[in-house]
Amino acid sequence: MRTKDMTTGSPTRNIVTFAIPVLLGFLFQQLYNLTDTVIAGRFLGEDALAAVGSTGSIVFLVLGITSGLTQGFGVLIASAFGGRQMDRLRHLVAVALMLTVVCSVAVSVPAVLLSRWLLIQMNCPADVLERSNAYIRVIYAGILFSMSYNVSVSILRAVGDSRTPLYFLIFSSFLNIVLDIFCITVLKLGTAGVGLATITSQGVSAVLCFLYMFRNFDILRVRKDDFYLDRVTAFRMLRVGIPMAVNSSVTALGITILQSGINVFGVTVMAAYSAASKVESIISQAMMALGTSMSTFCGQNNGAGKLERVQRGIRQAVLLAFGISATGMVFYFDAASHMIGLFVEDPSPQLMDYALRYLHTSVWFLFPLSLIYLFRSSLIGLGNGLVPMMGGMVELTCRSMCIGLLLKPMGYRCVCLTNPITWIVTSTFLISFYIRWEKNIVQTGVFLLT
Image (cartoon, rainbow, N blue to C red; front, top):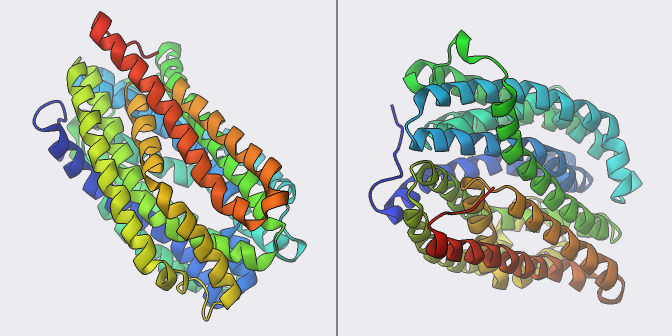
């Protein structure tokens, strides 16, 4: 059994050893999206690349809800594990499973019905609208599969196991590649086939995770008596999960607004930004892994009442974030042009120019981005979903103002600067709130997070 107690030992060692498998898992998770984009671009052409790539923001807009909910579920499970409350832990797992089914249906049905409307609202060009809609309707229809996988991963990570989800994800990532090619070249399903391959692979990964979890982890092996939906437990889970879901969706809405500004420039710029954002997402996976590690670290130590250890861990994580950002800068300058060539065979000079202009601007602002992931996840791990949700509102406001005020006079330069401006403002907001609460520990000895 690979549970990991993060309430003892070196905080840096705990954070890094937990984050490495998470990072590998995130990279293979990105392989889903990269595979979809690469295969769509190479087998179906530039229009398909634009169709699949440009839906990333509104896919995240909806899937962010389920991801935020499951992350909130994991916080309470981590706290129970850190406090050695094993009976309560099993009940929390059972409630998380029941809420997963209810929430996935509640999100999936309206998402499928409104998919075309969402694309129209973000100025999706008419020549790729049908292909984009075919893709995201399938993704939205399979929300139960993606949410089931996310909740299984959140449960395992809450008890310190970051390796098992990686193994199953590696398998399903390669399965996704095979299914992508099969659905496009054999079944001739076009962009809908790309979506079908993705949700099928996620479903397989979810089933394997649950089978392994219930068979090998005694503390997670729920019984019939654990499945009762008491209002207090459900409310506490949703109180943490809903703000995280709102935060994810608000963040995605801001990205959607940015995408709508990009779409007015036409298919070439859409494809360029899609490719550039995929390259950007690779380095951000390390930041997300650090954030996920901090969520579990803070959750377990908060449950154990070790608040000074939380402070020490966060300070050490800031140094790790700086190292990740510096590595990302080297990666951007050295490999960006080669990576873009993966998405479109023989990309036009114009497409390459747009993509590199975006990347060579955002590269200087990776450290504020890393701090967003770090402090947002740390606050979540401490049971506070409100401030991260407020941070999401700050992101939305910044992106909206940049697109509304700067797009017309600055053109594509506005696209390049919108994210860096947003990262600086949002990271400053989150850090200021954390410093305020850290001072509260010194004064009262209590970390007042509600």
